[in-house]
Image 1 (cartoon, rainbow, N blue to C red):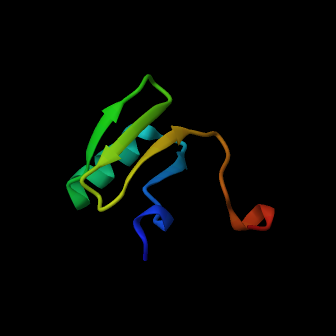
Image 2: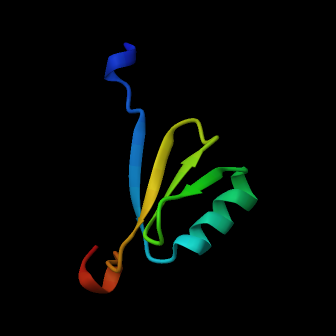
Length: 64
């Protein structure tokens, strides 16, 4: 795949950013850099990206 066609950054929702950081740091050794209370970026994951604070959740009860 050509370099310009590769995904190089992803953003994912998280209801609890601190819990997400703790999990991915412990299990995978990811590094995080906070950009305020509602966003954290990660690295050392094979791809760079971030988690943003979101109150929405996908659950089977609402059809997802």
